[in-house]
Image (tube, rainbow, N blue to C red; front, side, top):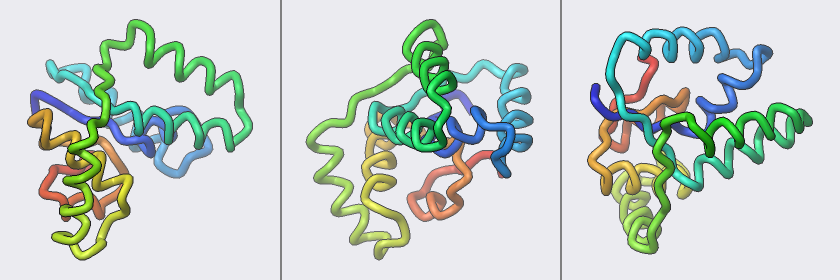
Length: 135
C-alpha cells in the first residue's frame, strides 16, 4: 500500500479510548510506521470527524484533532469537487444504495486521486471496489 485514505470513523476511533474500535485503530496505525505511506483524507471527512468529536462533548480533543490534522501531520486534505458529487449519485445507483451518499462522495474523491486503500471500520465500503483496512 502506497496511499491510504482515512475516513472519519477511523479518526474518531483514534481519538477515544472508549471507542470499541480504539485498540484496533491504534494497532493498525502503529503497523503503518514500518511502511512509507502517503496519507489522505478529504475536507468532508474532516468535518464529519470533527462533528462526531464535538457531539461526544470533548472540545479539547476537537481542538487537538483539528490543530494536528491541519498542522504538521503530513496528511493531505483534498477538496471535494462538484464532479465528485455528481459521480457519487451514479455510484449510489450502481451499488444499489449499499452505502450512503456521503460515503459515495468519499469514494469518488478516492477514485479521482487514484487511492484504492481506506482506513475505516465501515466494511460496506468494500462494495465501492476499495480495500478496507484494518482487514
